[in-house]
Structure formats: structure tokens, C-alpha cells
Image (cartoon, rainbow, N blue to C red; front, side):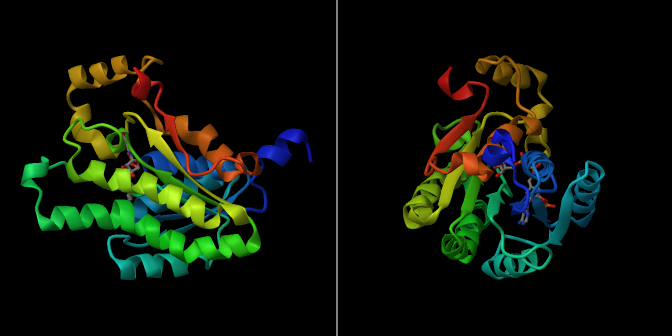
Length: 256
Ligand SMILES: NC(=O)c1ccc[n+]([C@@H]2O[C@H](COP(=O)([O-])OP(=O)(O)OC[C@H]3O[C@@H](n4cnc5c(N)ncnc54)[C@H](OP(=O)(O)O)[C@@H]3O)[C@@H](O)[C@H]2O)c1
């Protein structure tokens, strides 16, 4: 093994990526597969899962898909059991599946609160409960969450979405406290404004898109490939002493 392989190779590792069929999750799943992991993609839509899997296979990666809905506890349980079928218990679990329904806080109804918390916060929690203890027993594990600027500041109608993401960063710290003594790290990637289907509505306003790019220090909005390096780092042996952290991959958005 070369020095770089020792640090960063994911050969022999298994990863589950929720939301792996689109946007940031797709970018991360592709990166983990290209770094050597066998990757399981989880999402509801079969076509996007199959398209992403085909793209990863064409790039030489090992991939399987699990169609499933993370918006209920029963759904999370079903997904978790199906996700271990193709390649066994995961070494890495990335929670990128997320929804942003965007009603102003004052107009938030029970259904919006429940749906947002279920997908954005509860699913990562229950997946951690299912997989964290086994990772700790085996002495290696990586829990990686995808949060948001809105965990740190209110803007673009953060509402309950921001609340769910604030909770998610706290979850990573609690998971780190629980399992890091036995080789399991838990960290959060914090994106800026990423051009994905999630915020297609905001992308319709070119002035708004330009203003968001101007708020970064790099001078452009983000694309899913921007997460490749940070995701491989957090999934790999190299990050063994990094845990409970919120890592901003945002072109400087949060410090400008
Ligand atoms: N784009 C941004 O600017 C931005 C900024 C900050 C944070 N984020 C966060 O980044 C993460 C990924 O977002 P993205 O921009 O990549 O969005 P995206 O392209 O819309 O991808 C969302 C993914 O989540 C899956 N998903 C949604 N609901 C699900 C459910 N109930 N069960 C299973 N899978 C579900 C979707 O597939 P199906 O619909 O087929 O299920 C899709 O694969 C989210 O957590 C989001 O909050 C995004």
C-alpha cells in the first residue's frame, strides 16, 4: 500500500448513502465508490437510483440500489435491513436524503413538521442506532451527515428545515460521544448553496443565484462534486481523530 492508499483508500469498505440518487448524495456516493468502497444507494425513486448506479458502474465502481422511503420508522427499518443484503454491514453511513418544504415558520402545519423531522433528523438517528453499535464492535465506523447553513443562521425561510439541521449537527456530536472511543467517528458536512434539484425553485431567479455566489469567497455556487474530497476524507482512515465536527464545504459562504 502506498502512503496515500493507507490514508484515503476505501477498498474493502462498504458504504450506505441515503439520497444517493441525486445531488450531493449522488456526488458523495460516486466519490466513495471511486475511492474503492462498495456503495449502496438509498432513495425512493427507482429510475434515478438506476441511472446513478449505471454511472458509478461505468466509472468502475461497485454499487447496489435499495429503493425505500425514510419518512417513517418502519420505512427506515426496512431500508436498513435491505441495505445490508448486497455487501454486508456498512463501515460508512452517509445521510444525505433531505427535504426542504419552505413554508415560513408561522405557516408551518403538523404535516410539514412531521415530514421534515422524519426525513432530515429521525432517519439519520435511527440509522445510527441500527449501525453505530456494530461499527463500534468491529472497531471502525464513519457516520457522515449533510446539514445546512440554516443550522447556523436563519435565511431563505429556514423554518423547521433549519431546526432539523441544527438537530442533525447535535446528533453527530452525541453519536461521537457514544461511539468514538471505539473507532466510530460522526461528523457533519455543511454545504453552502449547491445547484441541485432540491433548490430548483430558487435557481429560477438568476439575480438571487448571482447574489448567493457573491456571498462565497470562491466566487461561485457549489456543485455536488465539491463534496468528493471531504467525503472521502471523512469516510477514510485519515479522519480517525476528527469527530463531532461540522465541516463547512461552502466556498467560504459561512465566513463572509
Ligand atoms: N442543495 C443545497 O443547496 C443544499 C444546501 C444545504 C444542505 N443541503 C442538504 O443536502 C442534502 C442533499 O440535498 P440535495 O440538494 O442533494 O437534494 P436532492 O438532489 O433533491 O436529493 C435529495 C435526495 O434525497 C432523497 N430523498 C428525499 N426524500 C426521501 C425519503 N423520504 N426517503 C428516501 N430518500 C429520500 C431523494 O430521492 P427520492 O426523491 O427519489 O426519494 C434524493 O436522492 C439534503 O439533506 C439537503 O438538506 C442541500
